[in-house]
Amino acid sequence: MSSVRHEASTVDPARIPVIVAIGETSGRGEPVGVEPMELITLAATAALQDSPTSEPWIRRADSIAFCHIASWAYASPAGALARRFGATPADLFDAPIGGQWPARLLDRAAARIASGESTVAVIAGGEAQASMSALVKAGRDPVDDGGWSTDPGGPPTFDLDQLGSVAMHEAGLISPVRIYPLFESRFRFETGLDPEARQAECSELYATFSVVSEKNPYSWNGRARTAADIGTPSPKNRIVCEPYPLSMNAMPFVDQAACIVVTSLSEARERGVPESDIVYVWGGAGAEDTVDILDRSSFGRSPAMQDAMDRALHGAEIGVEHLDVLDVYSCFPIVPTLATRHLGTPKSLIPSVTGGHSSFGGPLSSHSLHSITASVREIRGGKRCALVHANGGYLTYHHSVLLAGDQHPLGYIGNPEPAVLTADPPPRAPVEDGDLVVETVSVEHSRQQEPNQAFLVGKDERGRRVAAQTAPGDTASAHALSLYRREPAREIIGATVSVESNEGNIRVRGR
Image 1 (cartoon, helix red, strand yellow):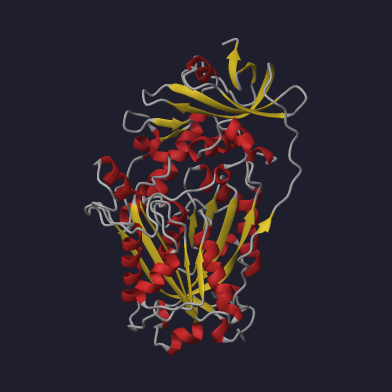
Image 2 (tube, helix red, strand yellow; image 1 turned 90 degrees about the horizontal axis):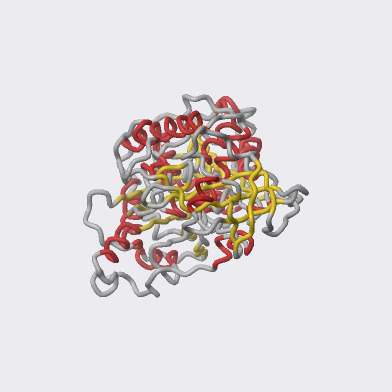
């Protein structure tokens, strides 16, 4: 990108990482029943077809890395793909669960090429949760009736500590749909927006995303929606956890896969890849926050997200004004909101090239792999520079990576190893009878569209943080903490509520 060139690059082309082939597939409109590795094999085959040189990139790969697959268990997806294409890579890497991994794996592949450890790297991932769910619903066995792999097969297992700390579990904070609204509600309060105004912002943002999704041939939903349609609760668009209706939640029940081939600039040119097909991987940066969200200093911002984006831009010696492509993880509206507010991006720069998790689809740990492939298409189409942000956990793990149509004068400028942020955790207190100032709250609604259970983080009279949940079905307490069903409307964040301990839960008094 000429605007950041200080002098002609003297970096060895064998140490400059580039993307030369991409492949994607989506099962939208197709009969369900295909397993994840079959989808990923289709995406890898599409990547080979994307290369005009007929180069057997995957068979030549010395490194194959995989995003975590949640819809079916495999002993080693990376090894399975290698065998299917006759590759014998020295480096096989199967990433753990986490939405940050697509960007981090790309940064890792680029770093290995820049250091001379690798010549051809493949990154792949995918999910077949739609097929898996359809088979189960129909009473069909994926192995016996669908012919799915037994390597080892079955739903993958994971440790409960991957869902948070003991204290989070005790407070019922074990699901993204309950936790991300905590950040949303606190952010809204700190920015001085009333619930209606903030809901309108989220609705407009996701309506814009749906327009992008409609144009994406690999999207799952593939139709544009109005802001009113997205933001208005209804039987088909019920509130899951306040303030997000179903249309603002990630959609994991998809069949989607993607594959990327990374090599060096010299290798690409030697193999005859046209310059117009080459996309440069400048590199990126990652950061990790505390796994326990109750140790975070604030629910209104994400220091790790800010650090990952800032260091990526700083390492490249560019500002946000140099970006003309931006894709921010969008499992819930709060994530792209925090990113764009921090970066100060203009409204014209839509923070999604896929169409977002709720419209394009949210194939769990591999979603941002689709963001990378979509960004590659944008750059091949004439755009200059893209930043892709990927997020894992509960705004916990972040990685940002920069792609461009020209090489950076310094070559590769990234670092795949994340910075681990530290902070003094606020003091905590057990659940007791007394008054709490509401720091943030999330209220889960029943399928009958009524507040059913609340998840509260507050401060006691000594300023200690308390996290607790109301009992499921204690609708009176849920109503008392709800943004809705209150006449006249009042702000619950920052308000003082009187609670009593009730077998490990809380009950709101004085309703």
